[in-house]
Amino acid sequence: QLKNLLFGSSFSCFAEEWKMQSFTFNDLPELRYGIVQKKGGPCGVLAAIQACVLQKLIFEDVASSDCEATELQPSNAERSQCLALAIADILWRAGDRRRAVVALSTGRQQFIPAGKYKADGTIETFEIGPFGCILLTLSGILSRSIDLVKSDFDVPSSTLIGAHGYCTQELVNLLLTGKAVSNVFNDVVELDSGNGNITILKGVSGRSDIGLLSLFEHYSICK
Image (cartoon, rainbow, N blue to C red; front, side):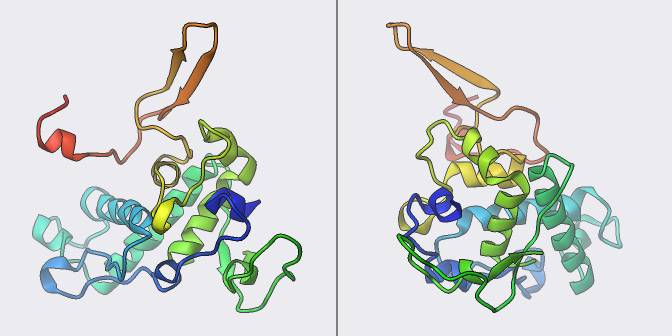
């Protein structure tokens, strides 16, 4: 179920770009707030966690100084604290502020793959019990629950990881809003095909602490 939700197939596996990606901060003085991406793939997860870290640094007085320049040049302890708080917020939000589930890698195989399933040496070593893009993704799914994530989708065949290992909008929305909806508009849109059939498109149900900007806003194409 978990692999089908992620990839659409139990034969698919996490790419190496995902397996090697952890949450490592940049040590350049002007970029100490930034998380380093090693290779393409889990960009959506990194963008979401980076946004949450910046929210903590800038708006929640985690930094020891009120100076904006200092907020973006945090100490090792401050940025680690912001990362931990950001992850906690993401999981608590996904669990509807009632529960949070953390997936940990034990290094031991937790089950023996059988039938129509391809082992990748990654998912098989997880147990319910933080860090890294895979662990955060799995923790977000389990905090929300597999069934609720499926119910968030517009189409049952949607996945959280799409072509070339990139995050889908559903995964980004899960991490930022707590629900894996397929769209970024407000609430629900009903499309009438004209023959009595109504298509329901699900958007963001409530105001999120962190919003989305696209190139359309940058180029003043939309308001």
